[in-house]
Structures are given as structure tokens and as C-alpha cells.
Length: 350
Image (cartoon, rainbow, N blue to C red):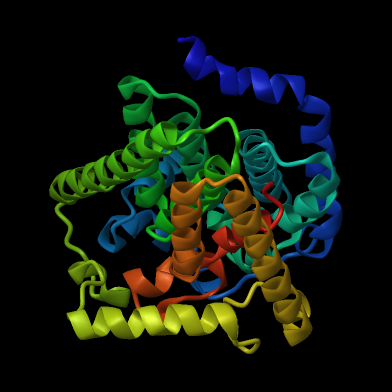
């Protein structure tokens, strides 16, 4: 039981920071919080997201139906933004604790977590904004349990939370992968983690992810039967985005290309002001940190760790653009890429 309650203790001891993060969030996004901007579904079909089961989003449907019974579905900027700000601030606190981020990098990461353009994209759909952030929080809490504890029960709990996070929005698979990828890299360069630990954590991250996806599918087909619904063809939902081998190879190429040369005109571009200079700076820092860590591992004669670390650097574009692997680039937009904040986190890991 102590394992499950420790995350509450972490938040309790950092409640002042939690309040500060919420205030900073409200200042950064004040224009959208204290005004009313509605995009797409939020403007013309506010209740439509209660039918999310057809899109594979059973958690969204369950939350919408609960809300309908309690207070009705409303797109309230201040109220919904406050709930979302709480969720994002909790995600930030848990991420810093889980990844043991050094103090000198925390101010920058706080601003990245609270101001990344994906949040502004979500705020155009204020009716569902807070629910989406709860889904992201479920993924982060689940990842924390998987990473911090080694027992099977806690691993299963993490997988269950992951399954319900996917049920809120399938793109949160990438959020789960991104934070666990950062944790894995942290373990590789940590002197306290030997090769045996790396092997054990590799198995744990793999089986909890697989179990979470299987649980999602089981729950999806269960709720489809309960609601007498079927999956839509929207963005390949009914086929689960599955394509041919050639299709996946093509998606991998796009993932690498967009990681190196991020298209600034694309709504999923998460660099401030869509300025190409930021992209170049990020790539320079990313490669510099990778080279430094490889050099350190070689000097310590940690050959196995060095090989694993090099493999992680090679697959990093796939990890952070995993949306492109699950479905086409054309179906990706700003709401799908909050996980890109962990690409910035990665270069702060020591």
C-alpha cells in the first residue's frame, strides 16, 4: 500500500510548487482562459465527444456520460482550464521526481511543460480539454508506478492506468513511451544502475506496455458490445492504423525526416514561433549531450551500456514521432504531440 500512496506524499510535500505552477499556467494562457475560443467540435458539436467509443475512446465516453449525469457537458474556459492546469502541474511534479531532473534545468522544463503549443491547441476544445489532461495524467502516473517499483502488482496497476489513458486518446501511447524512454536513458547513464538492472527494467517496461495495450483492446471490445457501437473509419480507427510493411517503412522515414527537419508550417510542430533556429539549436544540444554521454560511458568501459545508449539515440526519432507509426502524418495535429515536451527533457537528463 505504501507504494501506491507515495505519489500522494510527493505531491503533498510540493504543494507550494503545485500552486505556483497553476498560477504560471493561468498567466501564460490567460487570453484563452479568460476569453472564449472554440474550434471545430467545441463550436458545433460540444456533446459529440460523449460518443467517443466509436473512435476507440471508451474512457472519454465514460467520463462524458458521468458528467452528463452530474452537471451536463459545458465548455467553460476558466473551470475546465483550472482542472487541466492541475493535471499538467501534477504531471510536471511527477516527471521531475521520476527522472530526477537537476535543479538548474527545472525552470526551463517548467516553462516547457506549461507553455508547449500543444496546450493552446487543446484549449480550443475547452469542453474536452480537462478530460484529455486527466487521460495524460493517468499515463504519467502509470509510468511512474512502472518505473519506480519492481513488483508485479504495481506493474499491473501501471498497465491498467495506461489502458485507460489510451481509452481517453490513443495518441497517449506516445506519451507513455516518451516518458519511459527518458527514464530508460536515465538508467543507462546512471552509475548506480548495473547491466543486470538495465536488463530487468527493459523486461519490465516491455511487458507492462504490452499488457496495457492488450487491456485497452479487451476493454474496448467490451464497451463496444455494451454500447452496441462499432469503430469508425476516421484516421484508420477501425483498422487500428495497420498498414503494409512498405507503409510502415514509409512512416519510419517520415518520422526520422520530421525529427531532423521539423516542418514549421505543420500544426504538430512544437518549437516556439515555428522558428527553424530553435530546431537547429535543439538538434545541436541533442547530439552534443549524446556524444558527451557516449564518451563518458566509453571512458568508464561500460561497453554494453554504451551500445544500448547508442541504440536509444538511433531510435529516438521513432519514439518521439511514434504517432506517425500508429497512423499517417496527415492525421496528426497539435493535440497529439504534448509528449514532445519529453524530447526537451531528454537533453536535460544527466
